[in-house]
Length: 159
Image (cartoon, rainbow, N blue to C red; front, side, top):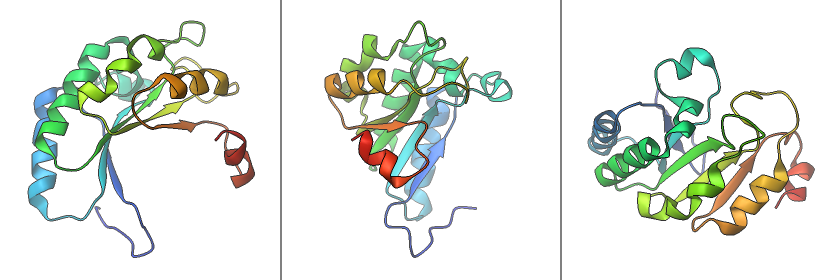
């Protein structure tokens, strides 16, 4: 399943794990595997209930200390850059990222992607690009935005 196509300039692995020891083991195994990849992304954005029931995905937004533990564990086990993908919070009326974004670099993260919707919004309503922009300006690491980009021209509007 882990194959890099010759046309892919950048190739990352995305994982969803609930415990730091699992993150550490994954990072170590991938280091030892000989696979060619550029980064590992920790999924803290999937809003699907079946995923969140396992303690992974967007439910992690309720416990930033858990995200910190996962990030630190995998960054210590891998020489590759570690990134995370998050949503703005559980509820769009109570975004949470601005409360802990200043800590991201200390967690061993190289970058993060913000999906501009909450867990409860799933894929409905428009992404909150104003909030994504505020977080991007204040974050100590590179920020990528996600949500409602269907054409390359729309991407340029959000740079």
